[in-house]
Amino acid sequence: MSVDQGDDFTLKTEVVGDFRVTVQEKNTSSKKIGSMVTIHDIGLNKQSFQDFFQSEYNVQFLEKLIVYHIEVPGQHKDAEQLSSDFKFPSLSKMATKLVPVLDHFNLSDVIGIGVGAGAVILIHSAIIAPQKFLGITVIDPAGKSVGFKEWGEQKLATYSLEKKGFTSSAEKFLIWHLFGTKGKKNISMELVDQCIKDMVANQNPYNLSQYVKAYMNRSDVMKEVQDKLKCQVLIITSAFSPYKDEAYAFHAQLDRKKSSIIESFETINAFFEDPGKCGEGMLLLMQGCGLAPTLKTRTASRAGPVHRTASMCEDV
Image: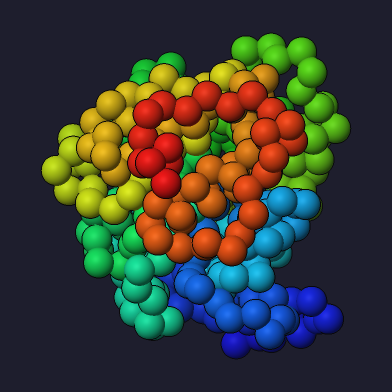
């Protein structure tokens, strides 16, 4: 176990099974009201969530929660290349392997947040171990199995990453996955460029190709959620997200009394472009689960335009 002690935060990193887990806790006398588990998307790792919780609005979550950042095998910064003998697990298998990790930390009744591929893992986890989760926030979940066009693009990207590293074709796919191709005019190219630079600098391309393959071979979780997903669910998508239609299709399968969907206008990826809006939705989810009475919502003027369906969030 490694421990990083700073003035504001304590970070403890431990390898549990196939996962690398970093426990982030703010150094404060405030009583913690619960625990949160994060699971990252392809091309990302725990740093994306650490940045997410440093935004002006979301930093308050660290005052009240202990956060467990789960990193998929081989995706952490400066990871050594996975052995060719290592059988990289499917997304559903990772969900199964995640349950002993939660047991290791004696976690139950947690709030989960997952993005992209991480959202799919989180959904499977909540189905497999419903007793572990009070509620989950899933950002741009791809509930269906991969389509032919996406399969072809991912196939080329995984070959490039596995054999040649971060080629232009690999980068093109990763940009599409995170930021789409619908031409949002005011997307920050600085943000896009920085994401790619971080991947190239911090991630092993072979290891990343294995995570992309697992995502490419994802099963259709839509067939399972209607009867098996028991916890409160918040779905977040964006007006220009390539996964917007799937997010709404996923929501259509859920119990409306236990689910909500938020669409962020004028963004492609709300996780990057407006983390405060995501945080506000997370707060509503937590309040719906009976948590976070002392956390503060953003004012309407700061929140900006958000579309919500009728849901548990409005019942709080």
